[in-house]
Length: 391
Image 1 (cartoon, rainbow, N blue to C red):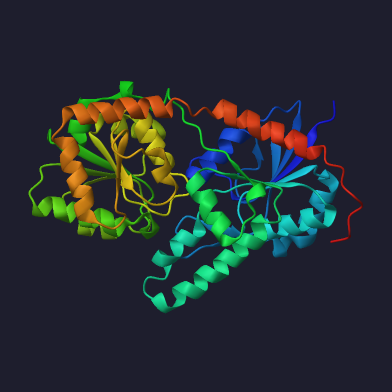
Image 2 (cartoon, helix red, strand yellow):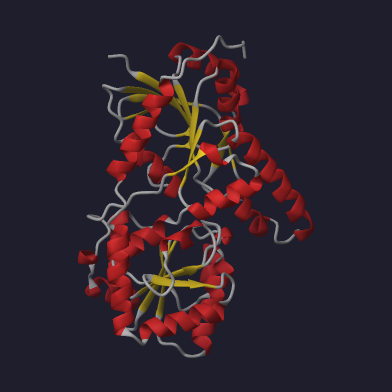
């Protein structure tokens, strides 16, 4: 049986760096070596993954996003070209529309190799934050980004998008609808579960028995941290006796600590610890409007935690307002406070949201999503390609 050869391009292949890499590894760890042969091309990663080679190329660190780097395929142009020609891929998977992604897309186009991509990051939503000190550049930057996204994704044969909201926004940018397939994300309900509740551990973290509101994310400004800080200040202004538990790390952490002096900051924690914190808290708060999907919201829901999220970005698609959570006006701290108070005052409402969230999250299985992905690779590899041009 001939194995299908897949060249997999990604900037970074570190297992738990963020939601995008966690999604990639859910697929990578399920590769059947009897059916597939993978070649991973990345800037940062191990020498091999599950028995398959990782071909690493030079990178440059990104000053606007600590901990992230960008691969520079131009510095390894011929080495990378020869590696790919020796591998002779049937399908190309591109994680990101970056320099590396553009190289892969051009290589695929000139050889008529089918391309699959998963839409991980809604870059255009970040521009308001990156250019908040130069607002006169925002319109031009969004136009440039939209053009780049449109050009890249319209050269992909299949794009997995996680939410109808994101699909609609991409169509508005000019990405062709027929290329997109709704492909959500899975959740490990054995890891994230109400059974992980440990009030003693939470007391050790907070030092009191007040209700605990948890926020979990990378601490970067594009997560709408200004609104999180405003909610905290509003809660303190009205003397609302709650704990704010902030889980995560990032370039904005020091500013958040300074702005929220009574909040509890855990830094980055492993998934086992995170699952206990979710299950032990009382409410999950997530004001980000830049999410492509919002893995943390689904994790909180699977933990039986009532959620209050922004009515913006992909994360809002999880919530049916008033049934399994609340959606708030994205930058209106008073709206969030109103919904927080409603939940804290009603045991019945918290129980309803928790039960509905558990029912909702139980439908998201990685095994099913992986089966779709690998079946699509198989179908795409059956496409007969014409003679290619020289790169």
